[in-house]
Image (cartoon, rainbow, N blue to C red; front, side, top):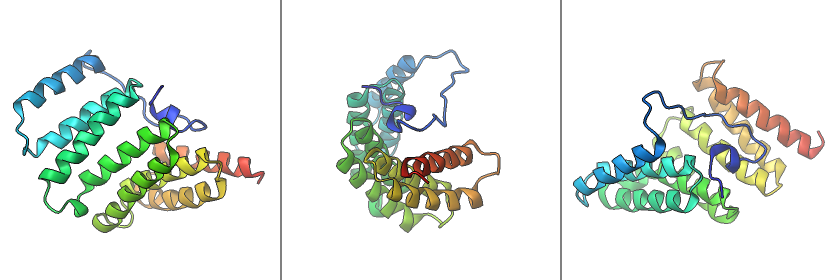
Length: 191
């Protein structure tokens, strides 16, 4: 099963295209990070970030299970090692990443649960117009779109758009993607 950004949002165009300017393949980067794990202690604050980076590589390669395993390890490490985990943007990112994989696997209720946890934390720790909130709202809208609940998808996309309009430059690709998602959701509703 493909876990790329495009596949997790079936009707949505990819907004990020990974590019390697160093000539290092994703597989080589994953191996390098996995070797780095051997040098990190169980309580090292970099452990969660390293697992997240490995998960992102596997996600880009379409390896859902390996991505999910690493995202879960990142979450476990973050919950164990980060101070005030309910106030951590890193923990929110872990939940969001797990939610993206669950959506790609069509495990929509679990995806929604993870993304709502991410949103709950981000609403506590980030300013109200932070771009990360726009990302979380967009991901939640994607899940509702997958569930064919286009009205809820639009509700979350409008929240995402409001944030992105105030926090991103007017030519940012995420804005055009959000407008596209909105048009598709309206089309699905026959509007």
